[in-house]
Picture: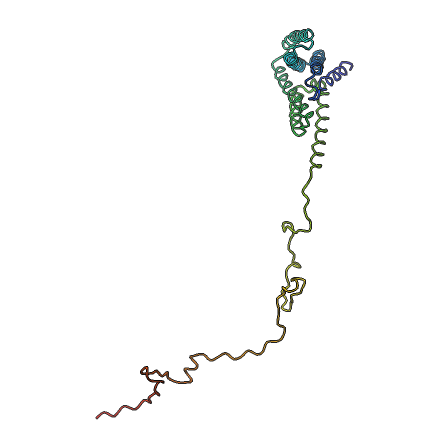
Length: 273
């Protein structure tokens, strides 16, 4: 129980990553390296060799970056730790089987995603951090599936930290989305997209319907004649009817003639001699 409690404390120390404002401080970087070294030592004591090797390798990567970026920062202490890390890495790697080497590689993927997600979180890139840490959680789930009885307790603190970070990021993302100014719609305008026409909305088909001033402003309403219209006059006689009344059409024989001659009554043909 005491060993497990010490392991949890060491892991929490290792994952207490500094904010980006402190990344230029070599002392803050050294604390992160030291946290990973302690994590690796606790995991090695618990005989979780693939997880211990992954932690040693991460500490070695970060201490090399520290030495290159800040060569004047405690050079003797940094060189000593680099030598000790090389020895620990070689000894731990010799204990790994083929399957455990695969777990170690997945654990390194988890560490990479975890640190990137935390850096994005401190940079206020909440949506990117949420996606990256979600990926880290998926990798951690795969590690636990490999050896549930051993790895679950070993990575319990990382798992709890991941869930806490994801919950916090989710709340920040939702808060940001709610706080964004929205576009106010004028509810007095009927955009015609969600309104269904009912029978009562249709115009009346009654013959006695009248136009009122509510539909048209004054001066624009068409004038309607309410007095009854007089009886319609009988239609004028067509030219055909006139022809039937007058008789055969008469034509002028020349331009000097003022009127057409009277029609000649037909006479009986004379008898044959």
